Image 1 (cartoon, helix red, strand yellow):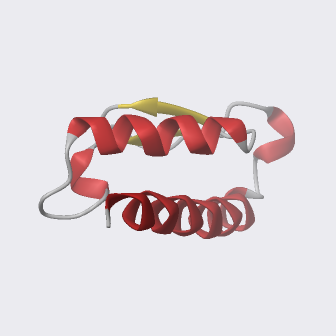
Image 2 (cartoon, rainbow, N blue to C red; image 1 turned 45 degrees about the vertical axis):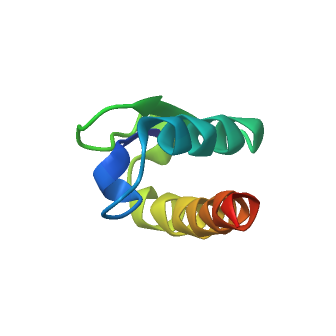
Length: 74
């Protein structure tokens, strides 16, 4: 699946630099992520019908990477 992330996905005072760092970390984990606002979409036939499971795994990695960024900011 392709995921799109912008500052509003991170929270009220997120910066573009933080968003780009999050995207970089998620790509390192193997996710297909781009900067922007759009609907997340299945990109492979094998993903159809699996979207919810994939999104759940993505959400776990998203929160883990976001926590990493927040720790570095402290």
